Length: 114
Length: 117
Image (cartoon, rainbow over all chains, first blue to last red; front, top):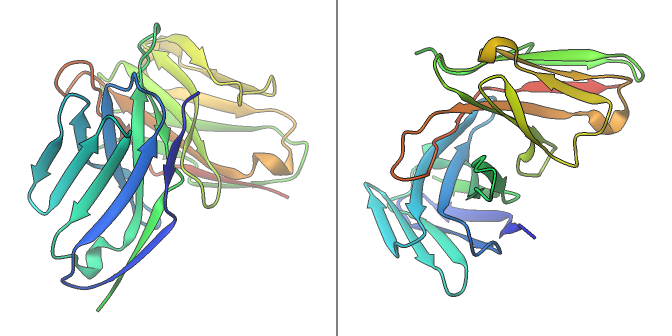
């Protein structure tokens, strides 16, 4: 079945790099996403990667995909206090109905200490 | 483009009552999703509409839950005979084909937080 797992908590110092990890089970996933959720706000798409890519960089964000191990990571360079939030890994499942529904992990709480 | 809006933002109800939530997607987005998020968990898919057609329902969506999207615009999610286990954040998202290939960027609303006493 479809399952996405993440570590629950990460604490870093301001200016350090943060690496958030995720594993998924559905080998047919086409796209993998990283969403950010701040208190009282909706989910915000940060970045995504197509399953035939190994890496994608977008400003301070770097996504690495190891398709063989079904492992996805999000690296945030020069982490700021404003990056404190919950980060969700998600895979899109298309199947025969092509709904594009998202399967989310349980979220990683990132705490950035000044 | 004002984003996805949801109403109400908070709802407190007594067990056994019926509640209805509304979602207004981004205009011209033909795809609409409902998710449920409980404390400490990621969102879980409930149901999907393409235009006015409800094309997929999760097993999480018991017969006490019903969703509609008349005319393919706004959507409503009704929960009948609410139970304490229904307490959660209900999220709505809409999308259209924006990313490359088959990917759809889903834009999420702020959610409706339901508390069942």
